[in-house]
Length: 127
Image (cartoon, rainbow, N blue to C red; front, side, top):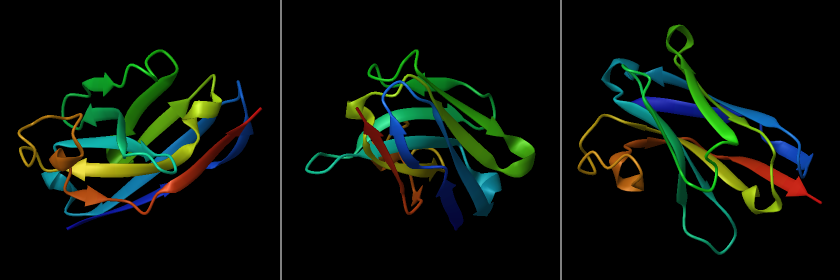
């Protein structure tokens, strides 16, 4: 099992920045990738960004490319999501997720690829 704890959410204004953190504990050696998803009220949970733990390779949703950056600290078993130039439409609950690899056919943009989830952290962007 892998436990994930997110932090760093909050209320910000449009154009501001925010950094989310996700600390992993437990059987972290089995982690293939860690990602961020988000879910706005009344909408499906959607992919935001992911990072392959061993290589550091990253993938982003088109909606956040150029504004968000995912990174990791292997020593701390922590993944970060730096969010810049925040927009109203970025308002959502952000979830950290970890995958062992292959659960979803290695489709890193699919929620089914991830085996463990955090409790979520609210990000609210106001005008």
